[in-house]
Image (tube, rainbow, N blue to C red):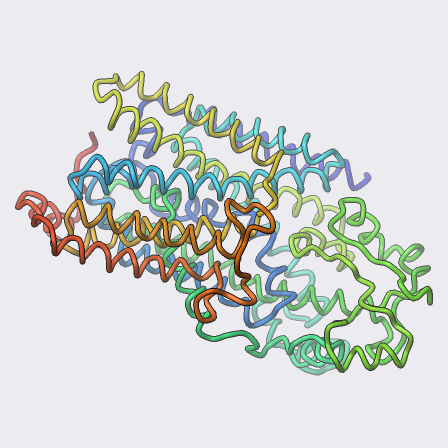
Length: 595
């Protein structure tokens, strides 16, 4: 059986499962559409939450980012998992006790202001929309590679699948579909990692194999990797080479951005009790850890495999020849990925070999001049292909490649569904019912939620088909917005009885606007090329890159909120009592009634 047929079987079978679950778990009420009837078991919810969070960025991109940078990109691991600790300790149980359907509804009620609710809706929609573009685009890339169709056709198929289980199933259908997607993506991620860890270190547990010895040389795996990359002019893999202050801010931005992402917070509204919300967060951390503990090993081992393939005779020997790339089956993956435009190489000096090295290193420039090299000849290696190409690079069985195809799509689709649900809930529950048509019937609200979801899918598909060309910036913007606007409002709403409605609105707007402006100054206004005044290599404020500014935006939000509150009317006594009832453990077993 050829590889295409195997890929088709794995992807087709997984899609059939998702749609079958959606039909079985079809939402019949607004409570089921928004919060799965508040009857999800904590373990089930933890697994669904893990799938909701582990997007295409976690599954496809993170190991690639670590592989080609090393220690400095461990901030992704620390920030994203740290955010879940914040969720578990500071947000999830209290928000569940409040008993609302959406984040915006909590902010509107706590700050007794329709304006606060509207501002929260705007932040939620912008953050979620920017995030979902990357997921839909990732679906197109994965389909295009593994099913050998165009990115456009792949994205349209993926949109139809999301439509089938998200529009009809709502949170209830999405929850149980995400459980299936978690099972698919975690197997797809860990099984190739186990194979590769066994090949390189003889240890079946990748996280332990990372700190073990390389079977071929007998030396520690990381020591061997450090030696190879430094010999090729790259930074030492296990050393800290970046700016510590910016790294700390970036990690903090990812943490509070994670804790403020609405599609993740919504998952904790689905459990029966407040205690279950805390257990859900704990279980989510367990399920996330299975992938996040494996990711550093995947990155390091893939970097070692790639380097060995380009320097089969060692870094002091001859580089791989063009003839070998064209004729040796071990290099077939290169031709396959070259067709996608995400991998490229060129024999610049015409010596019949492909030299891969850091041509920006002064030491390597001198060596290159001596040997007649004319620059790095691995001209393109997109970081996003590493996990998807890893089984082919390691020459693993065809069924493993098919499993990875299904896993990559599961990761992208699960997060896309969660984001689209957050958008549709904000539109139908917070805008239509909460502001424009408060007397709407439950049936009418459910229909408006489904229409909003369908429109959101169409918009996300269009943006995925016509991406503005700033995928990395949109992810930074999504986290920056959540960190600078939503997270501080939630924290002050739960833990401060002093912050009033005027202060909360002023704080959210201040955090939102300053973060947007800072990102636009560095990435271009509305991401239009060549309209930026600064770059992340030469930032406006100290060494703070645009991707790290979310933490600063959050500080501005807090400061403005407290400053404005001090100059305006105090919080009404009934709101003080409300905050007290949410925070005090009394009655924590039974959350507020549904409405």
